[in-house]
Image (tube, rainbow, N blue to C red):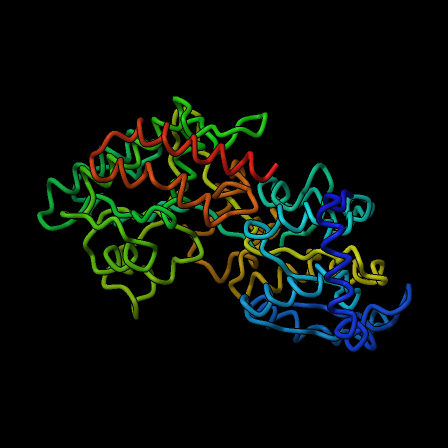
Length: 431
């Protein structure tokens, strides 16, 4: 495992001196010596955490360990890691983290323990059961650094009644999606054929499936910008055309998921493309006027096939500075076991294990069509829905700009060329 640059090590030394008092105060009940019976587990506020906490006494009884859970909001979690991990503190053993947001940063800085041997050594726990997309996202420079626990992928939501009225089947390809969106808009005055995110940064995640399915990617094999490739330009133009030609009239370019979901839930669109995790917002009759008419479909095929994102929203890793790594692994192994994963997914938390999606018990809390679509998307899903860089927010604004240009009917090819120069500069700055 690489532990960052000389520059980072120098900064770490200074940070360690400045935070020595904090580290001393916090280490009393921390990682302890190798094999310490007290395990410090940092978790985010989430349904997954709520389910696991109810079962921790079972783990403590089986393992003989005492688990101390530090449960924080996302913002608090980020602040805590920023202080403790950069200071080299050992009082974090197991850490719940967001691979898409901090995976590359943590990897570069050497915060992760290498789990490669651990995940591959237990056949019953079965690392091969985890979907490829999330596994790729929790791997850094060929080392497994996390175990994915919670996933989401890109879903095509559709109106059953409007498709039936148009005499059309559920679209299986991009061309069929465009034709169906066109037909619905023409046949239903005031109803958009399709709605999706339109704001530059927010739209990046949902655009990603179009990018991959057209054969494009954010970067090429050498780590250089690829958003000016022919495939990427085709994807930008197609996504923009869908919303420009068949989206809501006078479409806003400031829509994230709440705004686009509201349009669909009010019955004002035939299709909606967004995350599988958001389905309650358009399916639940308390939130949607058309919930009883909402269907769920796998992501349509483009020229390169169907390649929606299928990402690990959260993962569990081990702090490289922990002195209790073997026991930390025991906790992760238990919390992500097939049995616990099934229990958690029954509570409505989608997992990265293929076997749980094949188990009727595992899909019992989801609409049947949704569960089937999620499982199908998991087969060919791509493990990231945005560029995997340290400066995620800046990158999203850059690569999202051509989306807005395309939606407004502008020259998205030129916009992609311009954005690619800026994105390349960001990539160069991070090398």
